[in-house]
Image 1 (cartoon, rainbow, N blue to C red):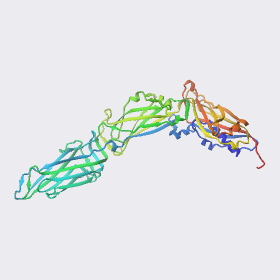
Image 2 (cartoon, rainbow, N blue to C red; image 1 turned 60 degrees about the vertical axis):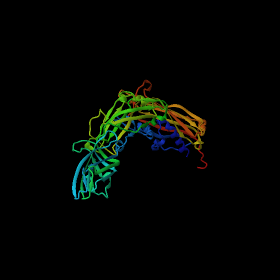
Image 3 (spheres, one colour; image 1 turned 90 degrees about the vertical axis):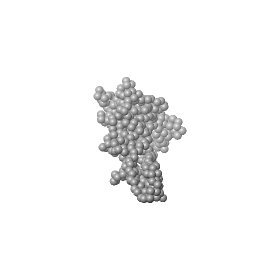
Image 4 (cartoon, rainbow, N blue to C red; image 1 turned 180 degrees about the horizontal axis):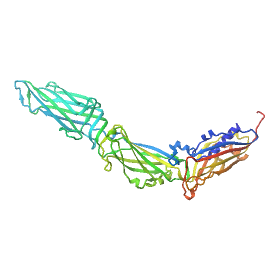
Length: 543
C-alpha cells in the first residue's frame, strides 16, 4: 500500500510535466517496471510520451477542437453558429380582405311574366403585403378562407363564384362556390382551410403578366318571376376574408429587406487558465461560413466584432474587413430546398484580428447584418420555404504558430497521503525529459493544508528546455534535461499536513524574448522518464 500511494504521489507531482490544464488520465496507460521490496528503493516508474495534441487535450473541455492544418501544424479551432429567423418569420403573410357588388341593372315592377338574365364579370384585387414583396405564387400551409355571398334581388339567383387565383393542390382547379339564393334565403357563408390551395397571383383580369393580383369571376343568373320587383341598383355581392395565413413555399420578388440574425458571443474559455505572461498567435483566422437556403442573395456586413478581455476592455475590429460588405449567394429556382455556401475570412492582412486574439480575450462579440436583394447583389428570382434560413458559422482557427513568453497557469489538485508517508524518510523524484517541442517549461509546487495555508513549497524549477529551431521552422534536435526533486525527512513530515497542491507552470517558447514565432508540428513529442528513490522503514513483524 505504501509503494502504491507513493506512486500516486509521484504521479501527482508529474502533472508538472504537462502543459496547461492536462490531467492525470494520461498516466493510466504508462507501463511501469516491476520493483523489488527493499528498505531502500530505487524504482524506475516508466516512460510517458505526450504529443502536442495530448499536451493541449484538456482544452477540448472548453469547446476547442484540436487538429492539424494542411501544413501539419497543430491548430486549435473554436466554432459557434448564428441562426437567422426562418422563412415563415422573414415573410409573414398579410390577411386578405376583398369583395365586390355586381348590380343587375334591372328595373322590373311585377311585370306579370317570368324572365331570365345572365351576368358574368372578372374582378381584380390587390394582394395585401406586409412590406414591399411582390408575389407570383404562394403554396399555403395554414389559414382560413371565409366567403359570403349576398343577394339583394327580389328573385331567385343561381350563382357561381370562382376564385381564379386559388387552385387546389391536387387538381390545380380553382376554388368554386356555387348555389341558389332567394328572397327568403338571400345569403350563403362558406369556410375552407387554406392548406388545400396554392395562390397564383401572376395574372390580372385581362390575363396580363403581373404580380400581387387576385382574380375572381362572378357568374349569376336572375330568374325573374311575374311578381318580382327589382331596382337597377339591386344585385349580388360577395366578400372574401383570408386569415392566419402561413406558407410552405412562396415565389416572387421580396425586395430589399432585413434578415434578422441572432447576436452571438464566442466564449474563449481557453484563455481563462492563464494568469501571467503572453501567448501571441501569428496567423489567426476567423471565418464566417454562410449557409443559405433562401432563394435570393443577401448583402452581408459586420455591425460589430470586438474582443472583450479578461479585464473587461473592449477591442473593436478594425481594418478593411470591418467596413467591407459582401454578397451571400442563394440557390436558384431550379434547386428549391437546397443551400449554397459562401465564406468570408478575417485575418492579419485585412483586419487587426491578431490584436484581438492576442489580448487573450474572454469572449468575442459577433453581430452580422444581412439584407435580402441589396443593390450590389446579382438579380435573382426569389423564393422562400417556411423553414428556409441563413446559418452563419463562426470558425476561429488558431494555428500553433506562436510566441509564448512566460505564460503562467495554475491548477489546484487534491493531495492527501498523510497516512502513507509515515514510513518514508527520504524521497527523490527524478525526471528525465526528452523534448522535440520549441517550448521550455518550469514548475512550482505549493502544498497547502486544509485551511489553505502553505506548508511546503517546491520552488520554481526548469523541467524541460525548448528545442532549437532551424531555418525551415522545425526543431533541429531533441533536448534532454534531468531534474531531481528531493524531499528530506523533515520535508515529508510537512507534506503529511498537506491536503492540496497548487501546480504552477510557466512556459516559454524558443526565442520568445527576441519575438520569434515557433511552429508546433503534430509529430513533436515530449517524453518523460520517471524514477524514484525512497528510503523507508518496513515493519515485518505482522507480514
